[in-house]
Image (tube, rainbow, N blue to C red; front, side):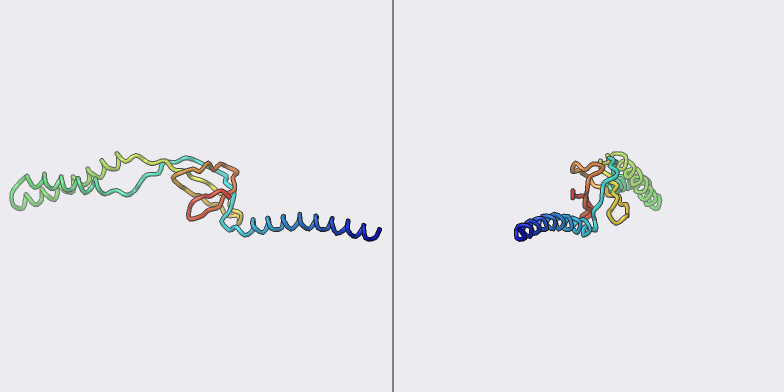
Length: 143
């Protein structure tokens, strides 16, 4: 009888310890992720490219060539410079207006350490509010 009771107690102890050690390991993994959190907001935004230059350069060259056709001597130099400046300004504005803003996704994440971060990326790998994520290299990954 004592042997049977001892075996039952050992079996129950193994089950209880096995269950709790799995929970402890899970908690340890949760605590170890310093870049993890829960998504609390998702929105699609327009992301404008701020790298402008080709329109300005082409406009300046065209304006300089046209300005060079006008006047003689110092007047020709002034017309060339004025044409280049005006052409550059016009080319810059045309390029800026013709660039279509790209769509991007902005995610608000409540991090496990209490901070709140915002991550903007070009794609949404089907991440929604309430999802557990990890911030890795400036992008979100499911956790």
